[in-house]
Image 1 (cartoon, rainbow, N blue to C red):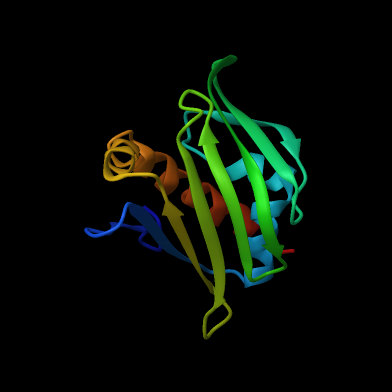
Image 2 (image 1 turned 135 degrees about the vertical axis):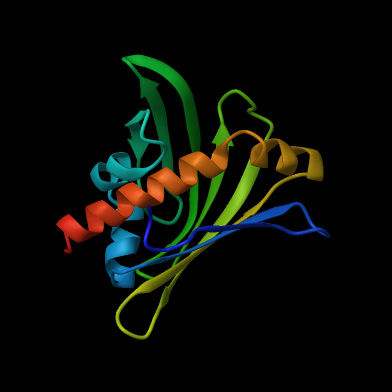
Length: 161
């Protein structure tokens, strides 16, 4: 069981998904786990899959891509662009599932310093319409998000750099 609850909120008025999660690590650590491809591959996604980074240039104007594998078989792949990378504070990127190449979401990640040294991560995803948003929510993304953040908790506890 995770120490911190992950909140996933769908706005009734605009097609967004907001994910809010706290970590017992400094913003620099949580930020690094999002921009270092070796670290990112170790925690993102559900326990049942592994992640292979295929492109990664974590800078403003850079690009990224990764694939999820299960039992040696590719299950899904994703790609996007880094629109803004502001060290330890904010990442703005696009996020596209290769199976739905017209379904681009714009995501803003903010890393907020908490009293006591922790971090509140906020991820705001804006998608084209409510149908897309509701499809993402019903896809099982909550399992991948929750299990991924559990893995990130473990990673941050083991590697506090």
